[in-house]
Image (cartoon, rainbow, N blue to C red; front, side):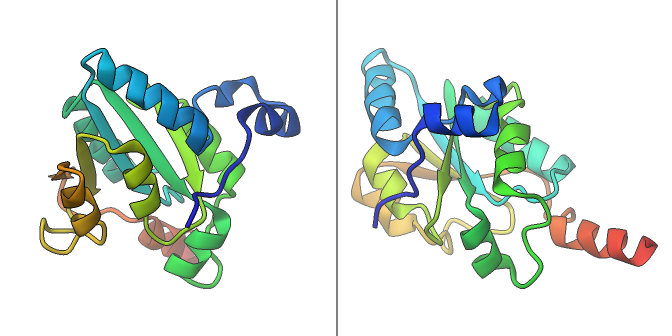
Length: 176
């Protein structure tokens, strides 16, 4: 499986948005991450749908960044978010989620992916740390075997899982 590839320049032109400079395709990102590793940088990878951005997401990404020098964030495409989260999701389009996450200071690189997990991206980038939120344990991370296969480590970051886009979506629907 290959990660969903957009050429950065095509997205920037298509969306007319200069703020997506952190968006990379997998081939460019693989080269850049290798270069950063050779310079001694510790690479951290986090991922998610980030549908309605909330404080749980911020705490997760902030703590992930604190685990290394550079934070790469994988963002589920609209298609993969719909498959994972169900009918009516995502609430926010992939283009808008990319823009929102790109504005976070703690995020250095973003990549959009179509798959249901990030194993192929992890194999390509081989980050030092793959970070998941507290809704996971070290034993149930879907990409655990992939990360261990190249010598990476899994970290669990963020606060207790008491914030969610799904719950916020329900509250918003009920308030209408």
